[in-house]
Every structure is written in C-alpha cells, then in structure tokens.
Amino acid sequence: MNRTEFIVATAIILFVAFCLGWFASWLINRFTRVSKAEVGELDRMAQALHEAEETRDQAITYLQQREAEITNQLSQTEAELRAAMDGLRDARQEAEEMRTYIERQNGG
Image 1 (cartoon, rainbow, N blue to C red):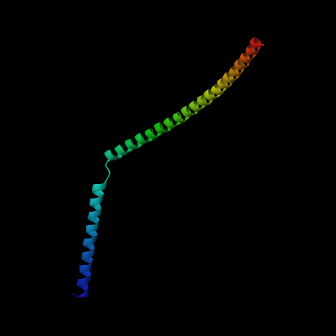
Image 2: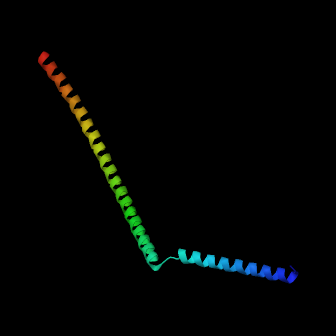
Image 3: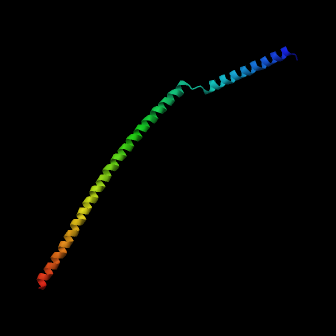
C-alpha cells in the first residue's frame, strides 16, 4: 500500500464515519422531535400548573387570614374568661364577707 492508496483509504474511512454520524444525528432528531400536539399538551400542562399555584397561594392566604381571626377570637375569649374569673372571685369574696357579717350579727 503506497502513500496515495493510504490517503484515499483514510479519506474514504473518514467520509463513511462522517456519513454514519450524520445519519445517526438525523435518526436521533427524527425520533426525539416534539410534535405540535405535544407542545400544545405541554402548554396546557403549564397553564394548569400556573392555575394550581395561584389556587394554592389563595388558599394559603385564606388560611393565614382565618388563623389570624381565630387567634384574635381566642385572645378575646381568654380575656373575657379572665374577667369572668376575676368577677367570680370577687363575688365569692363578697359572699364570704356577707356570711361572716351575718354570722356576727346573729351571734352577737
């Protein structure tokens, strides 16, 4: 094999390798190409995801508002309970003082 034959053989091998690479690339692009229907489906899925995220954000906001309202109601109820307990304690103390006074009046 002389120098010219070697160069021609190398060129043919490189050309065949190039053709095989190009054909493989074409096949990959052919099988992995996204169709318009798939793009439309992806758009619909993206829109649905966006709407779901908005709904989630609205639900979180509502729950935070509701939690604040309930916390406020709980604070008010606890304040009312403390006031009622203080009033009850005062009434018991007053009733005990009245009992003591009546017993002194009856006994004395």
